[in-house]
Image 1: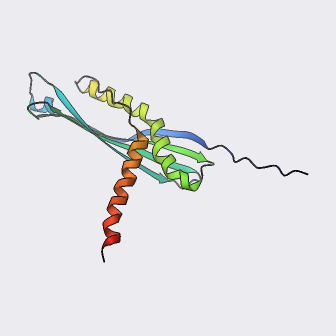
Image 2 (image 1 turned 30 degrees about the horizontal axis):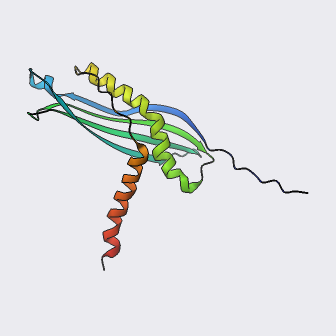
Image 3 (image 1 turned 180 degrees about the vertical axis):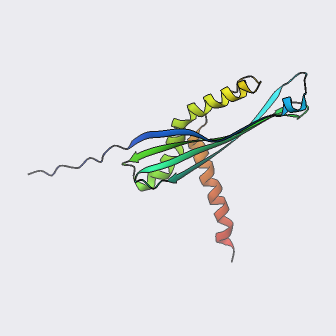
Length: 160
């Protein structure tokens, strides 16, 4: 009699919900009543967050984006957009050692197209050309965060 190998179940990922947790859009240009030639320079900051929920296998993943737009040359602020977009995910069959990168790479990758659409609509509705964010390399973002955490932990380990 031959022994059959149990093939591990394939990882599964289901989006249970998506929502805007928090959003703020300030049209500073309109508040100041400024007019004239506008040549926007956009600075985008992205932060990721993931946490376990009380239901087994469920996680909440959030993408926080801060977009600061200034006029090239004058450095006058045009607008400020801050948004946190989140999703609730049901995840199964992902090994514990792979769960952290899975949550901070795969889940944001699934949420990003919806976040990009909201950013585009909000900037357009705010009186500016729609801001179409470039794709975000969530793998590189994850690696940068791991490297940053290791660099922060390094000095503590060498202090006597």
